[in-house]
Image (cartoon, rainbow, N blue to C red; front, side, top):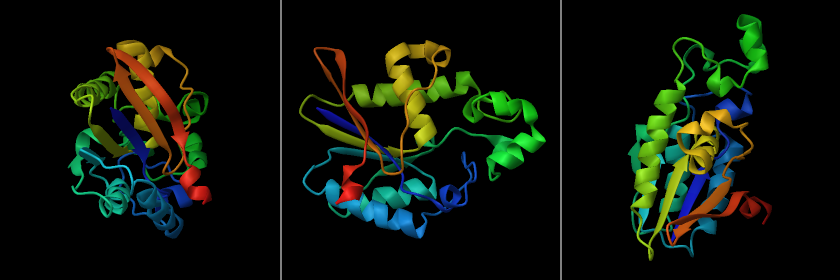
Length: 200
């Protein structure tokens, strides 16, 4: 069993230092180069189950992997980035000017009205957990998603519904790949945020 959790390539939002959330951005020129190398990385890793966030930057990333696979990624809103409502499309400086108290919080969990709540995030983590746990021992799955959501999902794997009591320790870079599996019903984390494909 192998389950690959993949962050999208650099987007125009990343390039312009905007907080994206669920606001839709295409890949930047750099991001398009990144996902070409990511696709090549998966050329010798056949995927049995393939899923993606339905946001453009994730779909474009998945398309680069699809070129080397026998199946297309199934897009889903469940794998989107954390919804950040009034913060989306703004730079951090703009956010801190409008909402000074957010400077001392994580933007993913600001608590502002109109943003995704911890309870809503937990429900999405549960859905992804049930999906990956349905993967059979001799199968491989890949999910293209977003840095914030994937880092929280990794926390959920470790702490369940109490993930929000943890300090978020995981950094996921553009096209960063994390690999997990289960053996004898026990979680195995093989690696987190691997992006050596960009250094070739």
